[in-house]
Image 1 (cartoon, one colour):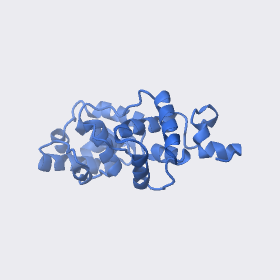
Image 2 (spheres, one colour):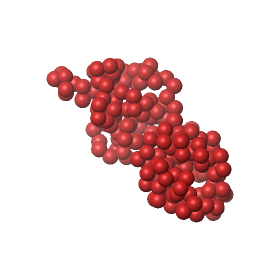
Image 3 (spheres, helix red, strand yellow):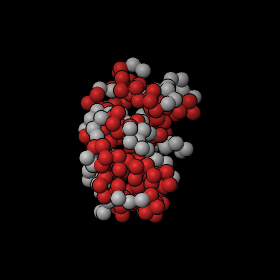
Image 4 (cartoon, one colour):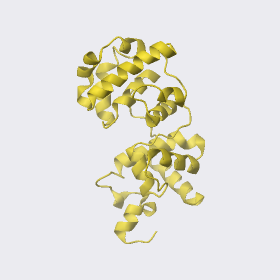
Length: 214
């Protein structure tokens, strides 16, 4: 993709989603880390409902580390994959207390060493808790990037690498949120709203269905 097209897409995203931000409610890095772990295969809306019950009394690694998995499961049961998430959250909290003084580390390597924390979760925490340039790739970013021709890769890691090359580093966090908003609002997985999408002329899906050659 040429630089001019990337700039045009970037400008449209700025116009469409000027206030795009992380929609996981949190007050500190630990809350964001827990919320992001809970968000796997779960909507942000549902996660926020769960954390609204959870965080008033379990908002630090020290407090969470005192729970057992069986005690945490009933509090997060409605998010799906609750057994595995409970195991990872408790183990992560205990590791934070044991190795990091209860604080969430600020490097990707240290974050990814925590139970249940992969590259996407680490990037979310780096970007939103510490304002460290990162480009998390979730299902929305993966889908939209492929449709807009920003990447032809199939894995999150390779799509992330493409996006980091296309956009200036100081735009990574903003573009990540804008692309997520676009995926949720217009470029939906099953029924994308191509006819009202300002980005449709750059979209391979729209061009293909319209019989227009890109």
